[in-house]
Amino acid sequence: MRIVTIERFGRLDPGEQSGYVYAGDAWLLRFLIQDPTRFFAAELPRMVHLLDIDPRQIMRLTHYGSPGSGLRQAEVILSLSPGQEPPIKSTARFDPDAATVLDRDGLVYRLQERVEDPGPADCPGDQLSDRFEAFLRAESTAAKRRIAEAIRREEENEAR
Amino acid sequence: MKRVKVSATTLKAGYQNRGKFVYCTLLRMQWCGGPPGAREWADTNFYLSEALRKQYDAQSIVFLDFRPIPECDDEYVVTAEVTVSQEPKLHPIRVAPRKPVRSGSIKEDADGNLILELRPDPLWDLTEADRQLFFRFNRLSVESRLRIWQNSLARYFDAADRHSRVSP
Image (cartoon, rainbow over all chains, first blue to last red):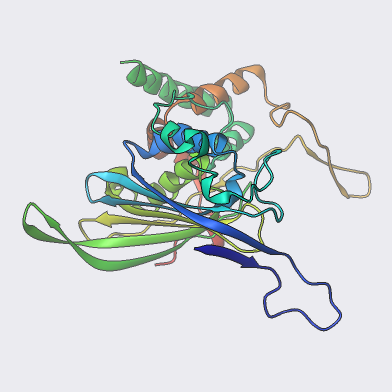
């Protein structure tokens, strides 16, 4: 399937400069995951790195699960673009032999390799981290002491 | 701080479990997020746990979808569906600190104009003890951070305005 993204769809007046049209070949990768936390922290970044794509080439990422069992199935649709901007990251401009971009060099097989867990980030930039930063800027020393105690308890729990 | 608009819908659903058909409520939440990754996964857990509080269980997420918005850089529509055994009571998402947050990056000049100072280190104005606490908090797993949030931190926050409330 071809994925075609059309800028300024239905909005271009005569004489105006046209928007970009990005076209790519869609690849649907489907697989089972063991744990969504691990998938998002380690396996997905590695996939992006290994396939040398820009994360924006992920046209769809869908996880499915069953109640009580969590998310286990994943489907990723990648758009591998024939050269228009911004598609493939780094120096790897489009290879006309695009149909083999994934399977050349055994890249798909390398996705089966176990990935090291990168561990937590100091500044993950998520909502919890943002809230905590705001808390540190707003609250008293006594409040911070209470939260420090809660953190210590959770650290102990995780160490067990 | 990121402003979040979250929408929520509930619908009756059913699934088969060991040959028996089980009925439940499905909560669907949607928001505008970034590219799929660890940050968005943490935020997914944060929004769902805020909306459902004690009824939330990450193992009950049955659908999670990231779809990029055309003509936007790095913006995705994130849709999550979670099953709940009973009709859920939806809670507001607490994002606004109850006390004013001092910002070391924004100053006011003599004429009352706001001046934004850009620093390479966003935490430059925190004390060393606060910085260490910040890093210790972030090194915990999402589950641990959510527990600290629900049990201790959230009491220092309010739902900011209608944009941050879950609208059933």
